[in-house]
Structures are given as structure tokens and as C-alpha cells.
Length: 325
Image (cartoon, rainbow, N blue to C red; front, side, top):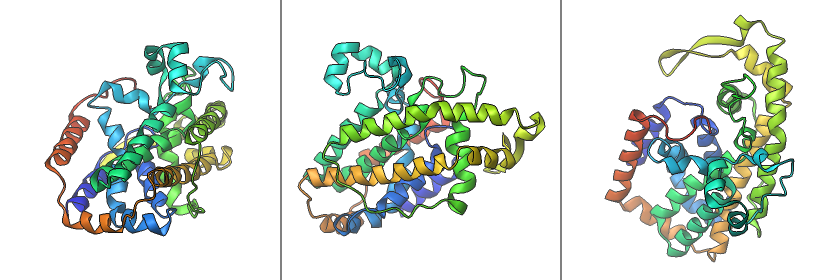
């Protein structure tokens, strides 16, 4: 009952331009569940509403904690030309080379994913069902964020090129218009990754390499549309909202040649694979009994209080740190 109420509340909230956007993050965690092996599915499938709803908690926490923001992005272009070899891939080496303050300033997403992966592994080892779900839902968010090109670029919202709003356009408007009607999320099974840090950096570099295309093609498209055709007023969450028109959105997606769908599919695969990797590294503990226990045990008071604090901050506070990350 509690999960259903929380799910309804999250889905009714306005979707701002953060990370993949609430809609896409929810879809990514949702579809990731179905890539898991039966030994994990027995626990994860009954909790799919929880994993979907709480995929957005890290974004909402940005209205509560300033240190949350840098966990969602990394400005790789700050570190020289592609493939950014001046930036060490391992955290301790990177701190020695750049200082921790500097790393935090330009984003720590690849390393934070490793922190969350370790936390999930420990939660599996402890057979703590509540902690497994909380950590898995949030790990899914950070992994998905790293697949967004503008999360690996200092021009993260087109603010340096006169393209303000492109962040939410790419990651929210396009998926919301096309994902459920036209995109294919039937993906093969999750994979075990022996070296998850290498996979993380591989996906980060893919995102960084695509950032220029995201910006360049939107600027090209803008020159082909009359100014009054770029935006339209449409109803959103019961309010008339100015956003990119459907025609402009469809044209942009066509120019990108399916990039957003591919990055979303890659996100789904990576999220499921990181969940699987954490479980495997924990020794593949049986999860069937955890699933049965989960239905009979109420949520802890501390968890409920934490959700209340995050929701209150999201609804009432300005975002802490830079916007559109």
C-alpha cells in the first residue's frame, strides 16, 4: 500500500530538466528489472514499483544537499582533448593529480558509481532487503546519468552557445514524446562486469564524444525552423506550459538518428548489469526469502522520515548547486 501511494505521488510531480528527467529514469529502472536472472527477479520483480518510483530520489535530494550535484556529472572537456588522458581513472590517483576539491568542482559521477556499487554489494551480503532496494534504485539513477552526453560536458545546458534548455530537450522532451510509442526496450540479459570501473569510463567517454553532436545538430535544426515553430504551449500536469513543439522534437530526434533511444537502451543494460555485478560479487545470496520477508515487514521509521525530508525539500527549496545536471 505504501509503495503504491509513493509511486502515485512521484508520477504526479512536475518533471523538470534534471538528469534523464523523471519519466526516463523511471522507465530505465523499470525495464532494467526484466534483464535480471530468475534468481534476482524473484526479489526485484515484486518491488518494481519501488525501484521505479525511487529512481528519482537522487535528483530530488539535490534540493536538500549541495554535495549531491557533482555525483551526477563530470565535465570531461575540462581535462583537455578526448580521451582526456590527463585525468587518472582511479579515484586515489585522480585526487593526487588534481586534488579532491577540483574533482568535486567538475563532477565525480564515474567514481560515485563505484561507491554506490560497493554499497549495494554490501547490502546484498548483509541480506538487508530495504537497503538493497534503496541502493539499487539510486545506483540505477547515477549509472543512467552517465549515459547522457551533456552530463559529460561543461556546456551542460547550452549556456555557452546560446542553446539554453537543450539539456531538458534531449533527456526529457524527446523521450516523453517517443519512448512509449516508438522505441524498443527489448534487450538481452544483464551481464556480469569483472571491471565495472572500466565499463563506467567507457560509457562516460561515449557520452563525452556525443556531446558535440547533441549541440551542433540542435543549432543546425534551429536555423531550419521559423522562430514561432520551435516552441508550443501544451498542457503538462494540468498547466499550460511552453516547451519545444512536437514537430521540432521529432525533427531533432530524426537528425540524431536514434541516439537518445540508443543511450536509453544502453542505460537499461548497464543498470541491470551493475545490479547483477553487485549481487555476484556478494556471493550470489539467495533472494527468494528476502522477497517474502519484504512483503510482511513495514518500512522503517527512518526510511519514511528520509523520504518525507527529500520530498519536502524538492517541493519547497531551490536546487542546490548548478542547475540542469
